[in-house]
Structures are given as C-alpha cells and as structure tokens.
Length: 371
Image (tube, rainbow, N blue to C red; front, side):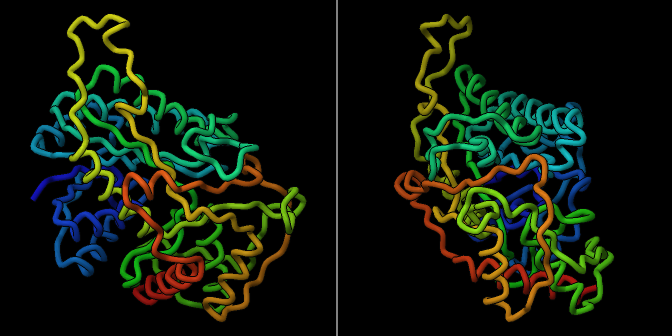
C-alpha cells in the first residue's frame, strides 16, 4: 500500500481523512502532538476500518523530531498537512502563538517533504483567505481579502509560502480551501472533539442540546463542558435574517477530497526540475502549473438562524438560544463556487445540511454515551 503522512491525523478533519485513505487502499501515518486533539479518536477509526493507524506524538515546530519521522517513512508518496491552530477568537487574543505554530510547523514539514523527495503535498487551507469578499460566491480566482484574524493571515501566508517554494521544488502541490466543515462520520464512531469551549457553531449547537437533555459528559474526550444556552453572535449584519452566512460542508465530503487530490497529483505531469542556480527566467511559471487550488464547499450560503432551524428539523430537538453581540474576527458572509473541484477532481458533496446536523447530533450522543 502507498504510504501517506498525515499531520494532525487525530484532529477533526484529519481523523475522517484517515478513514477515507484506508478505504481507498492507502496506508496513512499520523503525526499529531495531541495538544489540540485526543489520540483516543484513533480507536474510532479502528472500529470503522478494522485497522490501527500509528501516531507519532511530535510537535512539528521541532525540526529534529519532525525530520526523524519523515526519515522513517521516506517511502511516503504524499503529505497531507492539517496540523494548525484554528480558533478565530484565540488567534485574535494570541496572534504570536498562531504565527509560531502555524507557520513554523509548515516550514519544517515542507523542508522534510523536499529533503526526502516526497512527490505530492496537500495543504489544508481555508475560505478565510478571502476575507470579507464582496464577490460571492467566491471562486479560486477571487483575490485574497484583508484577513479578519491572525488565523486567516496564517493561511494566506501558508499559501504564499507554498507558491514561492513550488517554483524551486520537484513536489506537486494542491491547496484545499475548506469552507465550514461540520457533521460526523455516519457510523457515529468519530466526530469533532473541541478542546474546552467549542468555537464553531455546530458543536456549540449540539453541546447546548446535550446540556439541555442532561446527557452525561465524556471526560476521556473532554466533552465535559455544559452549554445551557447558545449565543448567536450578532443579528445586525446586512443578510436576509441579520446573522452571518456560511457555507457548511460535511466533514466526510472534505475528507474524500483529499484522496481525490492525491490521485489527481499522481496523474499530473512531474514539474520541471528546478535549476541548481536558478535564474529568473528559469523559475517563472504560472502558479497554477505547480500549485492547484480548489474550493471545498457546498456552494450554498446558510445563515446562523437557518442552521439552527436545520438542526431542530433534522433532530427534533428544540434549541435554547439568544442573540448576543458580534464576535471579533467574524466575516459577514462567505460561500463557495465549487465548480473547479467538480471538473478537475471529480468531487461533489454527498451530504446535505440535514445530514450534517443529524450526524453531528448522533456523534454528540454516541460520544457522551461512552463516558
């Protein structure tokens, strides 16, 4: 089986991608220091697939330890780089932490990818690179907007670093811009495990519903925080109901796109080897010739209140919520044009919004039931 190194493999999207990689016949190896994840999620991956994924508990900011893992798996055919801090409010409060972790880890992983000649690299990017775009839906050609938070800035910087590096690298690159991943694996065996108070809307919805039903918390998965009331951050935006608009996409759909991206790169022409002493004329390439970028979204914008309504409709649970003030770092509206991913990767979302809410709620109940 072809080996794939997955940084942040114990995380939310990472763990679902492990499942999809195994189903497609790849051998994933996880590198995750578990500072923002829980290694017990690999038990769920094993229950789904019947296979145990090895995890290296390594901080990717440590160049020596990162190099040692790559040296052990120099036969890998691809790297998927998920590992990053991703909480918007925290990034506003602790910008240096985000620049240190997200940028330095990327630099070390790219260095090792180059050193060991790994041919394919998939970067976990974000729709936050578009900022408060006036162009909706956004396409891959939509210019970067002003970053609304340091987290978004690190994703913009990450993409720019990869663009620069691609001009002198033999590796082929794909950058996947996620919109709002939600839901859980349909088996109920794995899902999102926020550390502390959830930042994203859907886990806050499910945690609030669970608190109102007095479901027992799962201390092993850190699901021990009750949220008796959901706060909607602002209802004075210029949208159809005053709340922010997002493009929600099922996490398993996003995970499957990574398998398609690897297969896409395997069929792509090998980039021209860089010159040992590069001259400007020898490294001028169209960015798209070495880095392919794809939006991963449903293509539909959903307001916060519409998402709450979808949860209530899909689960039969009434949600206790109130309107609060706006939250720093939030963009007003963002949703995707996903035609390029459909045309070039052959990717289409398979789950709708009701599926997302139903599987997220199933995971919340299953996870707490294991407590």
